[in-house]
Amino acid sequence: VFQPSANIARLKESATLAVAAKARALKAAGHAIIDLGAGEPDFDTPAFIREAAEAAVEAGATRYTATEGILPLREAIAADANRLLAHGAQITAAEIVVSNGSKQSLYNACVCCFGPGDEVLIPTPAWTSYFEMVELARAVSVPVYGDEANDLKVTSAQLAAAATPRTKGLMLNSPSNPTGAVYTRDELTAILDLAAEKGWWVLADEIYLRIAYEGGAQSALEVAKTRDNLIVINGVAKAYAMTGWRIGWTIAPVAVSKAMTAFQSHTTSNAAAVSQHAALAALERQSEANAAVNYMVKEFRQRRDAVVAALAKFPTIRYVHPAGAFYVYINVAGFRGAADAGAAFAAAVLEEHQVAVVPGSAFLTPDWIRASYATTESVAVEGVTRIARCLTGT
Ligand code: PLP
View 1 (spheres, rainbow, N blue to C red):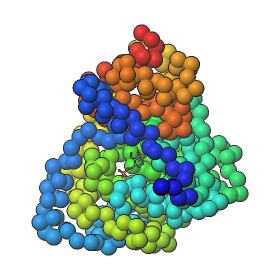
View 2 (view 1 turned 45 degrees about the vertical axis):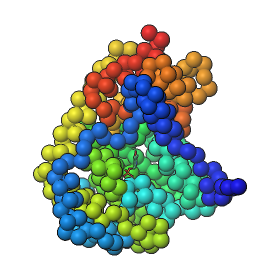
View 3 (view 1 turned 90 degrees about the vertical axis):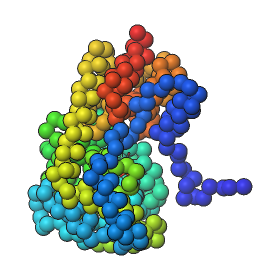
C-alpha cells in the first residue's frame, strides 16, 4: 500500500486542474461549456518561432545542452533584461539559469534559498503553486492578505507586520495571477527597499510583465537598488504564447545561479534543446517578436475592456480592476450562504450556466472566483454575463 512520504504528506492537488477536469467531463458528455478556467493564451506560438525551432532540429539541436541552458539564449535573456535595468552592473549570462518553464525556475529558487524553519511571505491571493513549492522546500509559507481597497495587493507595511526573525524571503507577482492587479513603481520600490534592508530574498515572478494595459508593468529590475537579494523569474510561456515549450529562467546572483544549476543537474538537466532555440528566436528577433506580443496584448486589452463593460451592467458586483495578465477576480462572498463561497459559486455556475471558473480557495481567498479572458471576446463576454446573472440571481 502506498504511504505518501513525509515530503508530500501535505501536498494538495491543484484546484485549478480539478475544475479543468470537471469542465472536460461535461464537455465530453456533450455540454457546451464556456471555459473561463484557462491559464494560458489562446493564441498559437508565432510562426517565426515555430520555424526557428524546426530549423534548429534540422541543424542538430537534438542533444543534451549545458544544464543552465545554451549560452546564446542566456546572453539574449541578459541583453533583454539589461534594457530594463536601472541600477548596478549589467546582467551577464552567468546570472541566468534556463529551466523547464518558470515553474521549475521558481521551484529551483525556493529549494536553494529556503529550508526548514524559514518563513516565506506570500502576498495573497497568490498562485497556488507558491505555497506548495515553499512547503516542498520544507519552509513555512506565510500568506499576507492584501486589502480589497488596494486591489488585494499587499503593502510593505503589511509585509513588515507579518515578518518574524525567521522570515527569509517573499514572493512577488506583478501583474498578478489570479487578480490581474499590477504593483505601481512606488509600491514595488517600498517592498524592495524593505526586503533589502531586512536581507530577505525577493522572488519576483514577472511571467505576465508584458501583458499589462495602463502604461505597462514595472519590473523589479527597474526599481531595485541592489540585485544582491533579488531573483527575477520570467519565461516565454505567457508573453509569446509558448506554454507548451516549457522555457523559463531566473536572473539571480552568480552563487545562487550555481546552486540552482547544481540542483537542476540532478533533477531534470537542461530544458529541451529545441525549445531553447525557439526561445532564442523569440528574444533575438525583436521586431517580429514585438509585433506578435503587441498584437496579442492589444487583443487581450480589447477583451479586458469588453469584460469590464459587461460587468459594469451589474453595479453590485465587486471585482479587482484587471490591469494586467488575462484574469478578472470577482467577489462572490455570501453566495447561497456557503462557507466556501467561491467553490459553491464555481460548482453552481458550471452546472446551471455551463461556465467554468476557478474558485478563489485555490489562491487562499475563498470569497472570490477567477475568470480568464484568454478566449474570444464574445465567449468571454457571454461567460462573465452568465457569471453576473448567477451571482445576482437575475
Ligand atoms: N507564475 C505564474 C504566476 C503563473 O500563473 C504561471 C502559469 O500559470 C507560471 C508562473 C508558470 O509558467 P511556466 O509555463 O513558465 O512554467
